[in-house]
Image 1 (spheres, rainbow over the protein chains, first blue to last red):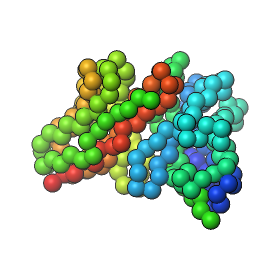
Image 2 (cartoon, helix red, strand yellow; image 1 turned 120 degrees about the vertical axis):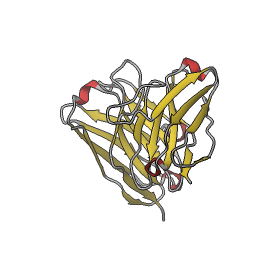
Image 3 (cartoon, rainbow over the protein chains, first blue to last red; image 1 turned 135 degrees about the horizontal axis):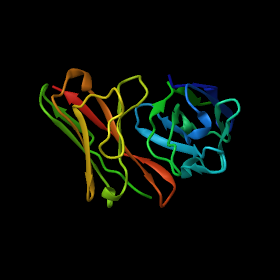
Image 4 (cartoon, chains in turn cyan, yellow; image 1 turned 30 degrees about the vertical axis):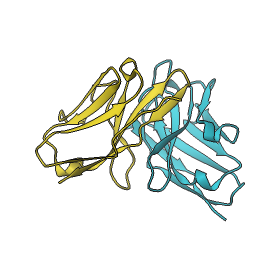
Length: 121
Length: 108
């Protein structure tokens, strides 16, 4: 069975950093784009970033560009999101999701349970 | 940037049909995907590539996409279908995933 398990969330002060991880199992991790999506409390889904199968391409929502970095370790089946210069508005549940096998991203067919990031002083 | 427009809420009686729309400029030229999210849970893909269903999703869920409007139709609505529903596309012009704001489906 496909499983995605996020970790690394927590409480951090504005301006601080966190590194989220997503452990993948049950599928050929290196064959899929991978994506982070977040959801602020009481709000809708917001795409954060996606990374190509081999890590050679990264795409970001404008709100996090220059502050967040998505990466992956295909040897260890791990997806990461390095979050720097965190802001109060980054407070959200962060989901890891399996994306497309195709040349471009597509649908998100499996999701993790999410990890909560709270940015507050 | 590309924008997807959804109604904030839809109400439907049990056994009836719910139709949730997702508007976008020439959305008919894009692949549209739909997610169901229940409170406290992660989203679940219910329709992909406009009208395909993942395994395990009931046939009561169907999708369509043409012109400037895509739609998710839930037939014979059940109490367990009460949830938020989001449409999503990949916008190749901006290299961004785009989500609609979500539609809360209430079963009366």
